[in-house]
Length: 206
Image: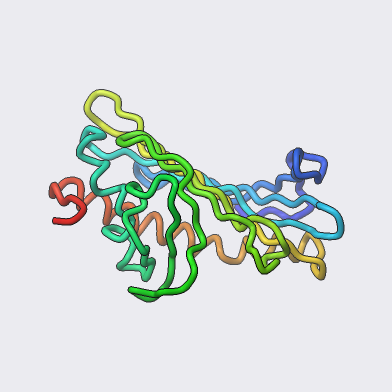
């Protein structure tokens, strides 16, 4: 579903109450994906982005899922997502994500909290050089919930850009245009890779 930008579902357009626009909702087997776009203003800056949720089930307990999930390189590098460390081992530290391995550029992510076998919370701080419109590029949560020997993985992905030269429609359309690729990489690459690793008993560092 790609409704018109004018289809506001809630919100007043402030940081505490963003305007939300309904986006895509997809269910393929056990994989559920949904995205909502949002805009709000802070001073002269229009902030636009999306909040996306990804949910799926792995037929293994959390203790088996965790060693694979916490190392994003194991299941994302095939799509040119390279991380400078094992994210789940970096609470209180930072890491870099790049499209090339061993990229020595600056780190863009802070690992705020890790609860082994349960939770990873990641923040992208506001760039010090004022890039990205002076707003945080994103905030992300990876959560594992085990029930009956199976693990439900729930992921929240939030990305945003600040701009002073776009209308709300143009700013939201920027994110709409990228949604098909975002959905594809999770549905067809990341999740199948992770499931395969867990079922094979692959662990970080082995």
